[in-house]
Image (tube, rainbow, N blue to C red; front, side, top):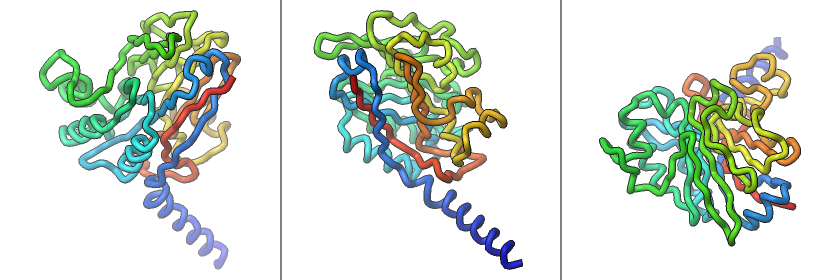
Length: 277
């Protein structure tokens, strides 16, 4: 009897922690990428990744803390991999998300792709990257949205590409109609889902950045995610993956699922990348 009571009590404490504490405990996580080509191109660049904000009628505590962390870093590049809106977001949510994105600044630029939760209200989802009711880009933020498109940038005479995958790339599982990646320069690929990673030649100097999974929100061994398959790419639920020259980082993101608003062992994170030869 006492054993059962203790188990129930511990379960209650863990649940309360997962609901009230960990979702707001945003950490700055530094990831080191070992790649000669990427290191020689980016050098001491500060590249930051945030994803899955899931903003609703108000900024969440985690979103507010993430913004403070990002602004404190003063990044050269900010990468965004979608799901800025709460699932089935309303007009208020879109307005809040647009306002949030306007506070992101990086010396070289802020590049983004859409997630599946960003597109419930088509007329408002367009406002994330265009002036309201216009085909022209937004002016109140510096974010460049990429949808099967690419930006070629340069650092100290060395070119690199940032490619953005269309949100439905999670369904096709390959590079689909994405722009061809220049073979002779490093590439950063932004994709809400990590499925595109498996279609990339391992000899290419590519870093894929993804979100979508929230890291599962509750820590479980990887083999369990492969069994239950609640996400399109259960083999890459969270963390850094490498295969020869290509690498993938799947972030735990900032927000939580509306149906499952807890985190246990997988706190929200802002990711800072460093490159080593």
